[in-house]
Image (cartoon, helix red, strand yellow):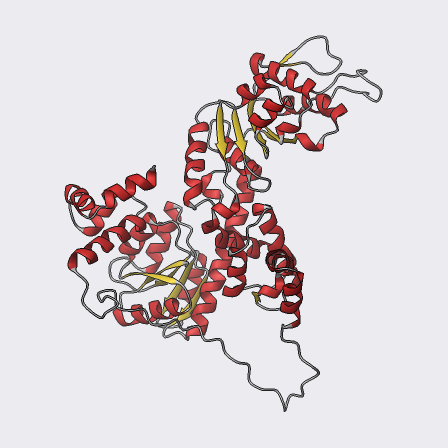
Length: 494
């Protein structure tokens, strides 16, 4: 559920706005002033959008947006004003606001504004990531990797970026191994330097040597001029060898020499050339198994496998899937000029229940195809016929498509009926202070639940948890042991 921040010093308006957002499927956080809003934004960079009142006593909306710009806080802002002053709206838009509305706002207007802000944020994130990729400054903030299974990957990337140690990235096809390599380069001393990618499985065996090491004029028929290889192009930068397990055995020997001596010998050359290259390799097959079977040189395997990083498949990091879908929808809708506001819960559940053997690349292609097929503002299950067919069989896919509502014939304007509205209301949640039998919950259980929530909300940063709960750190740790939370955290970490 996407978090949004509602900021207003009027408690009644604050509650009404938060209630509308909650009924629309968002998770609202509230703040009664500008300073409190900034504190929440600093602690939580995953807030999807902010509804901001312009007139507040401590720090007004303009001041909040000024502070966000100075601190690099990029959460989309929707401003709310009591009076529709054109000058005020223009000033707010110039200050970075994505949209505005006049209080009181109709629920439909607010929901559309929030969805548009999410879409804009996803598109801007895509653009920022693409710019970072092209400039060689791609970092962890540019990759969607919030799932717990990706925490170790990100941690290893940060450590690998601090040195030039050879890195071997292992993982299934389509998991994003190249993005991991770009994070390592973009977070280290070689950020902004050349990043050269070579797919070893896509080069004909007789051309691998000349592609990697280059050649001299006259080295073979057709060599009419000197041609630098990929190692020379990556000098002082990073060379990413994808699918390195596909390299021929004779080239593996020469690659081993490059790693040991830091020198290359172009085809047709009588002397070696020094190169300063950070090597990152990747494979979708276990190199250890290839080394045991003789398909990969064992000594090269140990030279490459100094710092291995395993990237989990998409099915093990499904927490990131909704964010990926939103980003792909925004990008492809912009590229194709279609108006896609979101994806239906049923379609999102269909994607969540699928195993994705092709991983992120398959998800990207599936969303692209759905955007092209879609005839409405929201992606529906019938827009993913291939996923339905692979998950439930071809017959189920045909039934889904045939069951889609299609007009039997033209409808005269006098006979047209009103379109049925979608009920966005959610069932009322039970009171958190009552158990299933209607009895008041014990104070210890409420306190334990509050501590668990605070730890999750602040990402396990105990200093912030203690400050938020208004208790000392020693008291917090005592309660962790008292409620058995310390043992649970240790077992999770293990």
